[in-house]
Image (tube, rainbow, N blue to C red; front, top):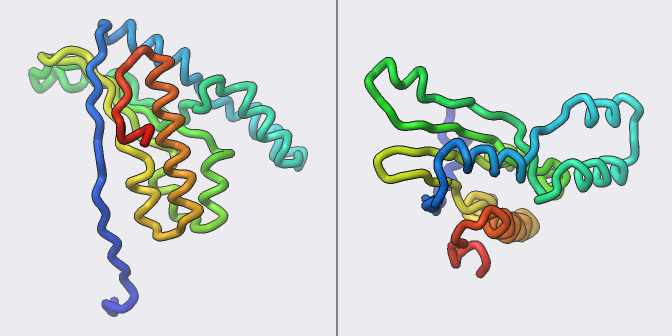
Length: 175
């Protein structure tokens, strides 16, 4: 492949490890209530009938009370990792909102590399924690003001979710 066909776009990520003052399973349950699962049947029904985008927006508002849905979860990784002698608990999620993602997608569909957002809940010797990267860092790497603006909006939505969950809010998410 010719070098002129490869574009490199380095960027700096910011990951937040947020201490949680609850046991792993209690916090996991709280998180999954705050960020409910994506219901493909409901959304696919809109696609099947060629619904207007306003119907998609309405369904998302109805289904995602805190602005996000869980599109995928790893489940608890501890049983598999225990085979290697590890005792920590961990579950990963892809959390997002496709009606927000669309506002970036229209400018550059490769933004879907970073949407939905990845989160992890883990518990080990340091206690329970929630880990997430700052959305605007990745979204800013596209060099498109409209995409970065949505990334900043996602920062604020993550901050609101953290507040809802009773967690400390990193200053960078509300700047």
